Amino acid sequence: MTSQLDELQAAYRELKAFEDIRQLKARYCHLVDSASWDELETLWTEDAECDYGFFGTFSGRAEIMNGFFRELVANVAPFSAHMVHNPLIEVSGDTASACWYLTANTTLMPHNQAVWAMGLYNDRYRRLDGQWKISELKVDFKYFTPFEEGWAKTPMWEMPA
Image 1 (cartoon, one colour):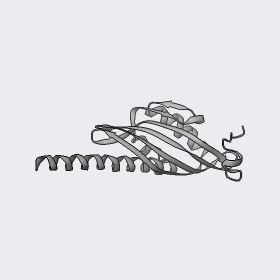
Image 2: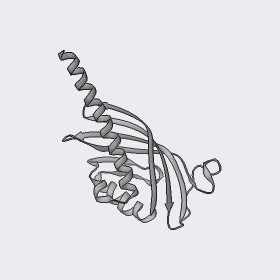
Image 3: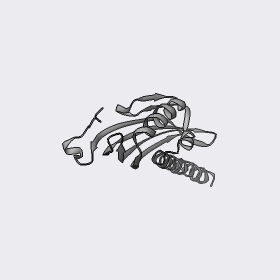
């Protein structure tokens, strides 16, 4: 009986970790899209690392939040709708990794340009004091294109200066 109970408890812990990580990623998307920077800041480890592709790399929670979100995103993306799906999540104790498909519709300023973005998020997480946090985030864009052109015509668009 004890081994069955141990197996059930282990399965529950694993499923709970999967769901907690799914909720963390969903919260990340909602907070980015609503520009809720103070709440978004709570989702990262202090030493988090981020690689946002052609938007740059950022080290540490303060640089991620101030350099990327509060300065860059806040000034150039007044609208965004992130959608993540098809997660592949692996949990090992208090660490985890996940790969997510990303699709996003975004408006970029100052050109008021609607763009489609698609790529893969490759994330790492750590559980600290019972809470999962993002410790690494990397975006591999597959396309970033003006709405009216699409990925077949212009897969990787560069915003004019």
